[in-house]
Amino acid sequence: MIRLLSMNHVDKRIRISLFLVLVLLVASESVEVEAANARVLQRKATKPKPSLAQPDYTVYHTKKAFKDAVQRLVDSCTALTMDMVSYAADDDPSYVANMSVVTFNNADRSASKSHGDDDDGRLHILLDFGEHGRELISSEVGLSFLTSLCDGAYRQSLISKYTLDDTIQDVLNAMVIHVIPMENEHGRDKVEEGNLCERKNGRGVDPNRNWPVDWGKKEPDYDPSEEYPGLRPFSEPEAVAVREIVATYNPDVFINIHSGMEALFVPYDHRKDIPYSESVNATLDRLKDLNTKFCNGSCSVGSGGANVGYLAHGTATDYIHQEMHVPITMTWEIYGDFSAAYEDCFRSFNPVDKAHVGTFVDRWVASVLYFLQTLPDHPSTRERFLQTSHQATSHEGPIIFDRKTIEGRSIIGGGGGGGGLGSAGMLCVFLFFFLLVYLCWNRARRRIPPIMRGLRRQSDTPNKGANPFYAV
Image 1 (spheres, rainbow, N blue to C red):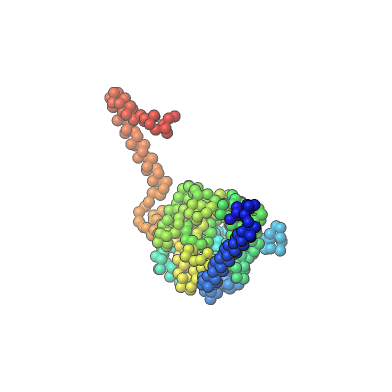
Image 2 (image 1 turned 90 degrees about the vertical axis):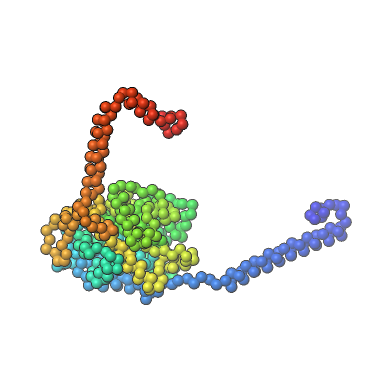
């Protein structure tokens, strides 16, 4: 039709008629598109929107109620003390991160409630809760864990329900446990103001992307609304505060408690591989056992980089493991609802109803206690327990481990019995057996007739032409 309109020999009236037909066709097409768009908008308007879950503050604590509950617990428990840590942002002194650190030290309950450096060489454990604002369940587990350290009835109920070892009080007395109940208080403020998807701090920076290891690297799916790493490593006072807490207490164990899925991670987060060592292997064995006992095998176990679905750069766990050399470093993800709508953030990261919250809180408090019970057998902490067991003590409460308790029984899996050689002893036995076999073989080899030895060498020679790996 366009070609006809451009031809000079076509009558002018015909060209006008064709032009009008073309205008009508375009107009009708436009009307049809607008009608289709209107129908889509109407469907969207009438389609029921998913009901977004809201935090029930009769089940969860508000930030103020949470801090008051921690303070009451410290005031009522002679084994707890609390320190306040505050850091201001270098580029904005008005932005200050305030962080409480609650310490459990039950070595001498008759002493005054001031703790110092005199801890009898006991193990130090550091647990970090509430690094992301929207993960309310993390801090709730932290509060209940502190309660379990002081409330014998609650602790006994967990021992009975989850068949924990009765020696758990002895284990706890052999440790100094530090707890950050809520790392990201400014992020929590944003959540309570209604931004239920907020994970970052009060300045819009993700505290768990603000650490130096592989800082600032952005994956193809990088989303600044979720994981903005800041202008530079340690630009945020929350990350600085945690770094200084780790440096001060020099823990043997660091656990960072999150939600978003159910998983038990060792480093790395920024790579898919695991920095295998005797210590990391032993930690993985315990996490696999914990997965069986508390997750019914449904928790992911391994490195965060290989299992979480994306690589995370600049995380606390990777830095604390790699640069601060904490021997047992983990990230635990304790809840996630993948059936929730993308925009339903509270439901995605937190159980909603009271019964569900109580079940998850108890299960993960028991999981932490269970993991702590395995430390007397862990290669990175075994010797510290042995040293602690020889400390003369007049402390109230249960006696701390003696050598027979530690060396004579494996705590993992509730196992019992047997003297146990340990990994070093088993290695010695294996090497001795291998040496014995080699000596016997070498002695027998000398008695083989020379022609048989020659035939054996020919038959054992690989086909170099058939296998390129043998080419050199």
